[in-house]
Each structure stands twice: as structure tokens, then as C-alpha cells.
Length: 401
Image (cartoon, rainbow, N blue to C red; front, top):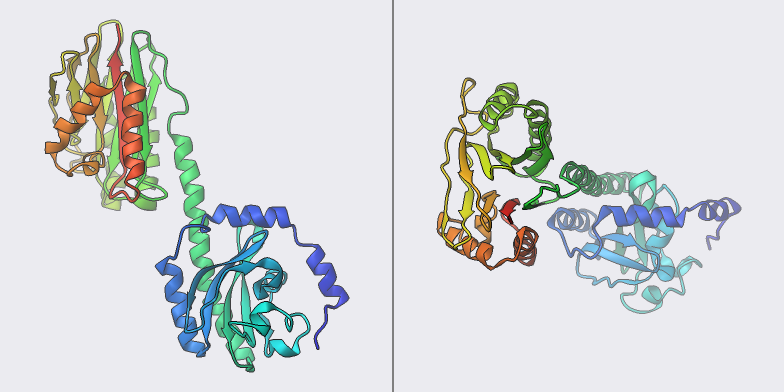
């Protein structure tokens, strides 16, 4: 019967368990249910090898979790100390157990002496950040069997498909952290006004963003933009648009700022086949004047202190349509108690998806005590819905005195 060699004991001692658990947590795949991207691989593996079950497992500090499994043999999550895959993650090579009853490491395991009566096991390790092994793609069968070198190579290849999916998860998680870091970290202090904003991507990352900062002279500059599309490609364009808007809008008025930014961005947007709708504004706090330029966005709502609401004038094409487009600016006067709200079309999707829902949005504005309360209400609504069809972004400015 195979026994642990001195080299194996040394190798097991080298496992950095805290780092391994951090790598597993960073993948953000625990507790998220089954996913088709993994299920299609376990279905293929079970059929290719003709085994009782194929599974993608994850090994936590205490238990082995089956992220995906396929086959007539039902595999339940269980204690780590009696999990075959706990041995798999302790080495870089495929672990093959041709007959568990003849292997003293596994012969007494509950899954061997009792249901589901595992006899054969083969598992290839999966890794997280830093190369820490976090789980396995494994095959199990109720009958002993041999497993050739060619079969081990094929299992390793299938495991590399699972690995690519895990790597994609890690990349998206990293991109999400970067994207969140690009959003404003602090609420600007503007005497006589309340300002609040939020951005919730439909997926890990998105194509919406909002931004604000104080311009020379004390005006508050605000931008809300929506890149056509979702996901990682849209997020890359989003970061580019944000950078260009920041570099061209410090001193210029809204119309000039959008025109200059659009000219800078046009070639990149044209080559990538993307368009960007955008609302860019500048708040003169002394005069209560909100000057803005609208680039095909059209989603702005002004709710007066007396409860009346209307959409301010929109105008201009989105960025990325015409190379020589010029944007002009319009303005709204904010009186005490008035609220200006700019948002992406993802907010409409929280209702019926059409402009008819503007009445409901206005009602939320009337019902809120301040700008932060207003944005929090939309955040809660978007979060409760779970799966969102589109990114949801909102910026609110309320004059208090």
C-alpha cells in the first residue's frame, strides 16, 4: 500500500494555508451556486472518461465543496480531512488512486467504506492567485480502474479549461477593484448644496461612471457617462473617457469641454465601434446656476421644491458619431429645495424601462429628505433586484439654501 514518503511530508508542510485560503476567497466562486461555464466541463469530462462522476471541487479550511458535478453518482460536500481532493491540492501533479480500498491513505474514508463507495479517483489541481492550489477537477468511479498517461494528459487539459475560467474570474475581480478606485472617494463639500452619487455595474465591471471635482474658481464640475455595451470592453473605454474628461475640463465651460474631449476620443471610439452618451455640468454655487452639455444622454430630471418636475433640454449627438461635432451648453437655475438628477438608462430598467417611469423617479425625489437619502433609495432598489440588465448610475445635486 502507498505510504507518505519523507519528500511528501516536507511538501505538505510547505503549504501556506493562510495564503491559500486568501487566494480561494479572491476567486469569489464559493457560495455562488452552480455555473454553466464549469458545468459544461464536468459534463464533457464525465462523458469522455465514462466515469460515475466528474466534479470541480474547492477546498476550504474545513470542507470540500463541489462547485460543479455531473454523472449518476451523487457527490456530497464533506469534511476536508476525508476528501480525496485535499491530497490533490498538496502537489502540482495529477493524483491517481486506481483502487481506494487498496490504498491505506483512503481505505477507511467514509466515502469508500460507505456510499457512494468510491473506488477510483483521479484529480488535477486548480490554482488561485500566487499559484496556491485551491481545488481540483476530479473523476471518481465505483469500480477500480487503471488510468494511462494519455488519460492523465487529457484530464490536465480539461483542468486547464477550468483554470482559464478561474483566471477570468480573478481578472474581472481585479478590474472591478480598479474601476471602483476610479470613482469619487469623497463627497464634495459645497456650501448650500448636497451632492451624492452611486454606480452599480450590471456585472463585475461596467461602462458607466460618474466623477466630480472642484475647478479653479470654486465651481463644482460633475460628469456622468454611459459607454455603449457592458463588461470589460466597456470598462476600458470608460477609464479612457474619464481620463480625457479630467484633462480637458478644468477651465473650459461644459460645451467646450465636451467638444474638446470628443475630438480627442473620436478616433479611439470609431476604431472600437463604441459610442458614449454623456452629461457634463458645472455648478456655480453663488448664483445657483447649473450649466451643462448633453451628448446624446437626455436623462436628467429637475424636481422643484414645490414638487413639479420636468426634463431639462437635451441636445447633441453621443461621442463617437461625428468627428467635428460641436456641443453647446444649457443651464438650469436651482432654487432652495430644488434637486437636479442625472442618471443612466439602467435606472429606468429598475422600473418599466421606458421614460414613463420618470414620474416614479420624481416621486422618489420628492419623498427623500436629502441627496444622500435619494441615492441610497436607488441603491437599495437596484441591489434588491439582484440581476441587473444594465449598469445603474445616479448623480444628485440638491440646493439647500
